[in-house]
Length: 135
Image 1 (cartoon, rainbow, N blue to C red):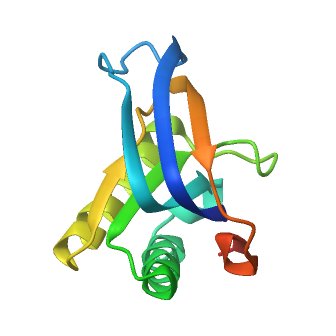
Image 2: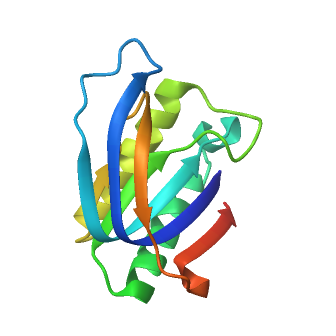
C-alpha cells in the first residue's frame, strides 16, 4: 500500500465520471481541517495476514493527532504505483479502515469509490501537511 497523507484546511469533492458500473450514485461533499489519505491498494495488501489495513489506520491516527483533528477522509487513488488490487477487495479494505477509525473516535468519511472526482484542496505549506508512506 502506498498512501499520500495531506492535512487540508479545506477539502471538497464532486463526482464527475463513474469508473465502476456498480458504484452507487454519489454527491459532492466537503470537509474542513481534515487529514486526507490518498490510498493506493496493491494486490498483497488484500491477502490474508497483510498488515496494510492496520498500518493505514495507525498512520492516519498519527497524522490526525499531529494536527489535532478528528476528521479523516479516505480517498482511493490508484495512481501511486503500477500494481493494483482488485477493486472490490480494495473497497472492502478501505471500508474496514473507515470503520476502525470511526470506532476509535475519529470522524472518518470516504470520497465516492468508483468515480473520478473534481477535487478542491486548500493545504498549508508545512512539512507535516504532506506525508508519503509505503505500508
